[in-house]
Amino acid sequence: LWSRGVGMAPAEDAEWMDGVVAEALRVKAARLAGGDRTGFEFELLGQKALDHRVGFGVKLGQYADREEQRLKGHTAHVWAVAECEELICSGSQDGLIRVWNLNGDLSDQPQRILVSEGAEQGVTSLSVWDGRLVSGHLSGKLRVWNVVTGECNQILEGHTLAVHAVAVCGSRLTSGSMDESIKVWAMDAAGPRKCERTLLGHTAWVNSLVGWQDKVLSGSDDNSIRVWDVGTGVHDATLTGHDDGVLGLAVHGDRLFSASFDGTIRVWALGTWEALRTVEACVRESRPSCRQHPSCLAVSGSQ
Image (cartoon, rainbow, N blue to C red; front, side):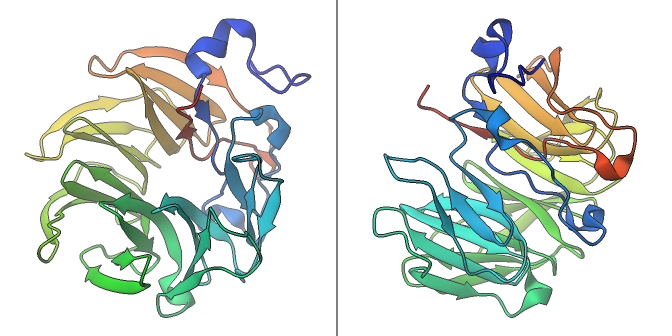
């Protein structure tokens, strides 16, 4: 359904695809098999993509009339990017979070570097809560940072394997892990953050999370999307249809978008969970090693 010549979806799909863009195309470490093989044609994304990973740097596209620039310094793959307090934060397999000033002179030197104790603490996910940066790590730990001072305010422990996804749901934080679980954390600015409950049901890695109202939606390598009530822990629904792992989720208006290793983006009605349509986002290859796939999604609110 993609028009390869002009780099955008055809007119009949433009309305519902408007505002949904790829922020990054990253392949999970276990699937890299020794090298980066995303191979995606970035021009197909159009002009809405703000930033994405390029090699061991962060590529800042045309944003606020800036010239395209690549931010370098990481010594391993960049797995996550987030904006916090008008700062760009990039998390890498090298165990570092580099913080760049969005409003200043974007040079190769970051404003500060947040250190999380080496490559075994590689940063796999980032999210923002109440002006704090939350990072998920290969070790299974989460860290809560003050990006202005560079101080780590707290370490959250409970997962036994890498944290692939972090998402904010109101006053709660959720984290999804390779250990097949989702943990719900009570986030209190005045005191320690506590794990309220663990959500179990997925039978493979939890790759992605997104919050919607009082729900958290989780995408997994078991090919499914599950809907949970974060306040009670009740499992409300399971969405099926993808033929491979669900790598990315995004909410836009009254719709949920899911990106999968099967090369498709699916659209669902929020609340009723009806499957609305499927887009073949990438050309399918017969050999898995050559397969292209959308691996995460972001929403642009400007258009």
